[in-house]
Amino acid sequence: NAAHATLGKETRIVRIETGRQDENIFVRVTDNGCGISKEYLPKIFDPFFTTKGAQAAPGSAQAAVSGVGLGLSLSQTVAQAHRGAITVRSTPGQGSTFTFTLPMS
Image 1 (cartoon, helix red, strand yellow):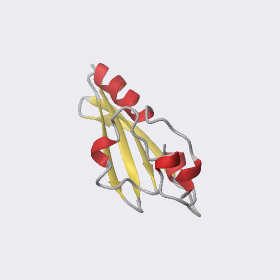
Image 2 (cartoon, rainbow, N blue to C red):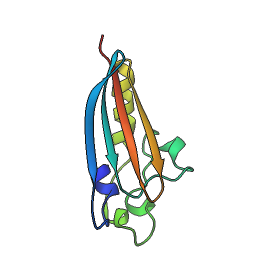
Image 3 (spheres, one colour):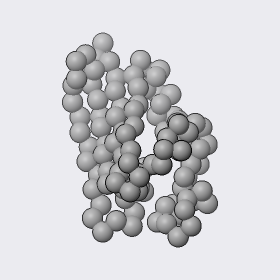
């Protein structure tokens, strides 16, 4: 998703961090892509919700990308099955940060 979100940027940045915080481990992915609008944030983990392809803004780089809207939904299901979580912070036009957290025990 981060690679797709940065399409059309002159300088594409995708940073992946891993670490430990308290009794959890995490993987954090940050990009400088298009960001996610506040109206879409509550929906991004819903199965089949997508902002890619036909759902993207006309003429945007994301309009050329296909997707069915299952990636984030499945990722959230896996995280929750292991007592973890996925969180997101996003600013339209500036990028997003997704953090996947799992308990160490």
